[in-house]
Image (tube, rainbow, N blue to C red; front, side, top):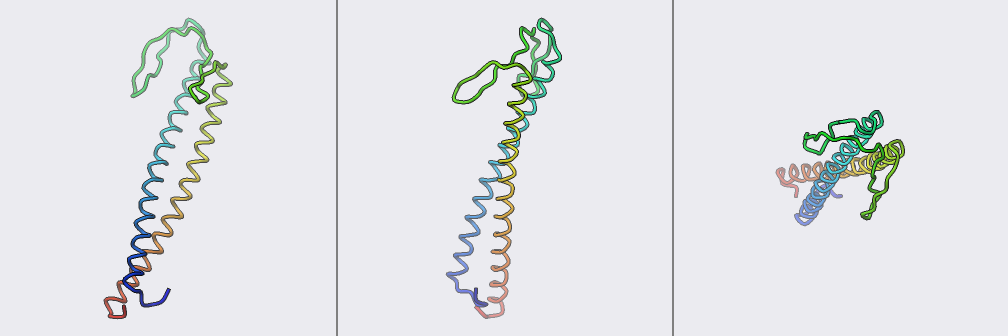
Amino acid sequence: MSEAMTEEGVQQLVMAYQQYQAEAETLARQLSLSQMTMEELSRAVNTIEAIEKADPGQVMMVPIGSGSFLHATLASTSVVLNVGAGVSIEKPPAEAKEALTARKADVAAGSKKIADLMDKIRQEMEKIEGILQKAEAARGEGFV
């Protein structure tokens, strides 16, 4: 890019910056959802671990969300696991925990990709900021 930047060039950079900014905001929301999903999967695994230690007929507190619990009598230690498309299957606790742990690893890998993409976008935004600052400084000196 030349030292002197046209008004059209500045406008194109501003538009690109705004597009990057919108993409970064969308990615930030996706990352937040991924983190909530990982937390939910962790809670599910922790609950299964507690159930593995329990015996059928035992009274226990079951988390129902938002820091709330209910007292329940454990009828079975098997876990009904959602496998997608509205289909659920019954699995032993160890298998359910393994499946949920694998899901969590997949979500974590997706989160890393999102975070890496956000870093690339931030770098591009910083480049544009630098170019715009130089253009503004040149305009102040009367070169543009």
